[in-house]
Image 1 (cartoon, helix red, strand yellow):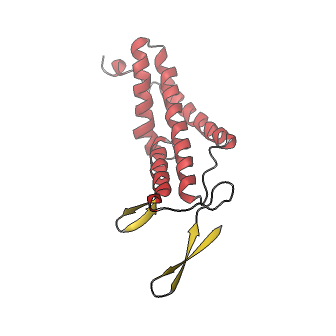
Image 2 (tube, helix red, strand yellow):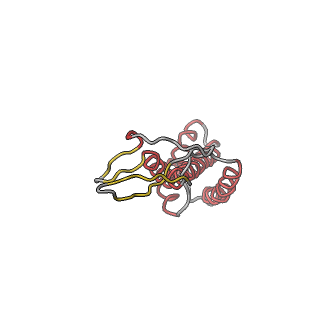
Image 3 (spheres, helix red, strand yellow):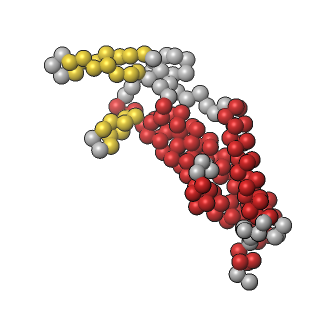
Length: 161
């Protein structure tokens, strides 16, 4: 971690962190790198990372309510659209929609958290990260398939005969 000394006020000394890129080269900061919110200066990268992490959290199945109120309804709508073409497509399209929301959620959350806590430019989304996220998604998908096969989740027309 590189440090930069900055004089403030009447000779007061402040130590601030300096951003470095992935090669370890210090980056120059400009006023465009910050945004002021409620009187505090926040780095734009950290703000962007926080928003990505929040959207990712809403899409990921990290807690039961996210799945119940976000992922399953999106996957259900996705499946119902394909169910209009053929009832046989409902389950597979719902599973595909569920996977898309889960994986997108994990990717966004992982990427956002990396941006918030990283002192250097993010190195990207690794193969290991993707494999871990896929494994978690497989487990959650099995739960959704069981709900469909058990009859808890059906096409809308089957709820209202």
